[in-house]
Image: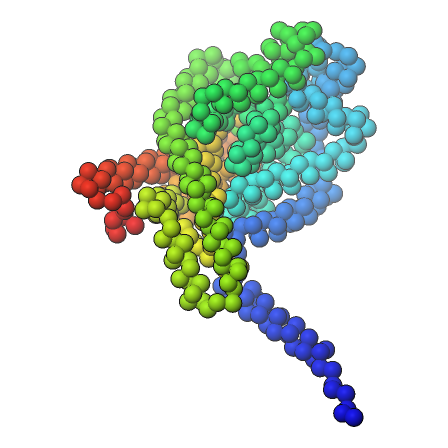
Length: 521
């Protein structure tokens, strides 16, 4: 009888585990992978997890170690308490800091917080709730940045971790601005996913918390028109308006004029002592009506100047989404074929990729090349990969989500114009555009040093309390330099697009196929 064979399975398993560890070490524990995580926008989904975890620790540390400062929380609770006691007249809803000046969604949300925090007395619980709001908003913001692949991860790390003012606004002040901005970023994510109804609901709710969200409205109108056409746009606008009416029912049915005057007061005068951006003006000039009218006129002129580029960017975004719908079934089918033939040689897989590329029409390939060139011009850096790229699993795809750049920039610029032309900026208003600043700065042709200088000076201005003439002037200068830089880049892209279209038109007239020349590629 033959002796039993020795069982070598444990040794083989140890060898397999050792080989796996060596493979992981060679792949991830090296300087090239570290550089990828630091500098490559495509790595942002991985880095985002680390950012959110670190932000959770930072917020807990701030809540436990930094004293809470009372500003508006008690006034919010007093205003909501009046509503909960049965008062629906906005003229009678007041707190220590003055009358209620926010729409109905604010009343409902802070009324819920009133009950959750034991009539507003449990401030520590409210701070942790706002820490959760901050983390959720960071997830939504980072998702947009990850889709667009425009800003390097290290920029977002530095921006998020070094702003004391932002952490203070969320967890040490408990303002309503973070709630409105959270709903705004939820709406933008839904719009990028083409979930229009839910996006409109979130946008209208954000407006119902604070009216500054309307600064995004001009861009949203054009985005609706470019994607949906006139009829569906009217339906979405009707939905937004209907939500506002539904939220305001208790007030509109009893004291409608008081509600409209109190919550949607476009002519409200801000106090000069709180201004961040106009400290260098005298109080008398700051409160003059003609000064406010001039700022409003400047706002409208700038919106008109950027209207055509905004429309062009949105139409290009729509075209790319249509190309995605056309090509995605082909790519999915090709990926299924590749998965079924994984045992084939690498050369054969490469040949399959070439065949899938050949299935695209000449117009589709030309469009993809023009898009890749446009992204390179917009970002100021070469794309990480070609339009058609190999995935780790061996499948092939097109990262169409990078076209999110064409949608996000007009939204952020529209909001930035409103902030730059605002009658007054208070410290809590920093959250209105803080998370868009890295994107805007990286949409300029400026050098890396100038970009960081702009971010640094803006942060300095918002952390100077009380504001000074120097900090106010510096903030305006940074806004001007940033707006000029973004405009230069946008109009340069427009000229490039026009030149490509003109040359393609000439090629068509000469009977040549609609393909880019080697120089253009």
